[in-house]
Image (tube, rainbow, N blue to C red; front, side):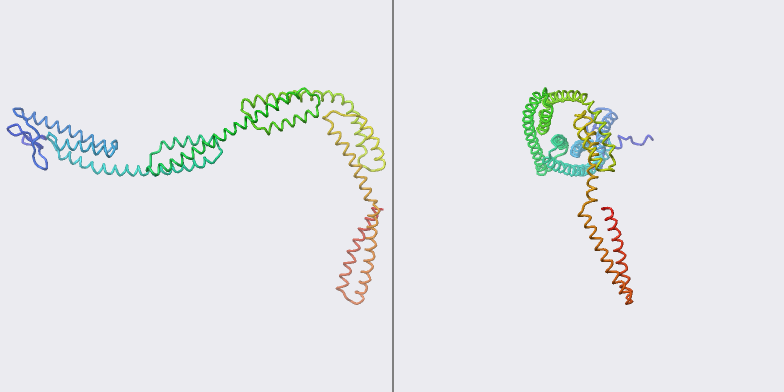
Length: 414
């Protein structure tokens, strides 16, 4: 820098002989302070430092506004405070540059205000859509019977509602009324359902206590058939009663099932003893079955009938067999019985006099019909009517086929 070049401080300000300090701006000079009887360089240094402090304030404000850390309203207030400080600054420096920088922040704040307004509008639209969906979903849940998941879902939606921004008061109040009314309706129906369910469970408890008590009185019965039937009736009533309160239901079921197991366990032991007693009978009946099945297939009906009478007499005399073999033995015996019955039916059908007479009459009618057609055929051939002769020959041939079948049937019946 040359000796004649002004310093930065001298560029933007001066001190006159009486110690008055001036700052230069586009609007002209203005007094910013007094420094009487002092070193002019120290005065300029002080007022320059004040300017530098203002420049730092402007820079910080720029960063905060550009970074979006201030709301547009707070930014406007901060801008006004810093501008007032610059406009009235007792400092020496390029105050116009600071004012220009502050002026540039105004449009940025306006732009940010519009951006925030657009964001708020978008959030409001999204919140409106979400709250409408919440209200609609809640109204659907209000009419459903999904008590557990419905209540959980409504709690989730309440938390979601609280997290959303408020809308226009009229719209927000209307949607909240829909949502709140749906929650209230569902809660009332849910409480009524569980109250009714509790009442049904209490009634079921009374029924099952009675059934368990009756089952316990039957546990030691040895009247196997009727008692087993009664246990089946009790089980049907138990299922129809529905559930009792959970802990009580389990306790009553243990009583009922215990009595049932006691009875059927004793019955099974008794049946096992009878099965052992009946094992010898099974050996005899197995031999009778072998003899009966030897009649199959039926070739001599009369001999089979005679043998069958003796077989059934010995079968009844042999007595009972173990329960596990009853179905098999009875099934095998019935198969032989059906075979004899079927053979008797076939024999009757074959020798039925009425059927023989019907077939014989059919043979006679076919023979006469063929004779009549053959006479007509001879006349047609004699007259040269080939078309009619052809039709008559086909008719004669068809009836001869029918006649052959009828004669075979008559032979089978005879």
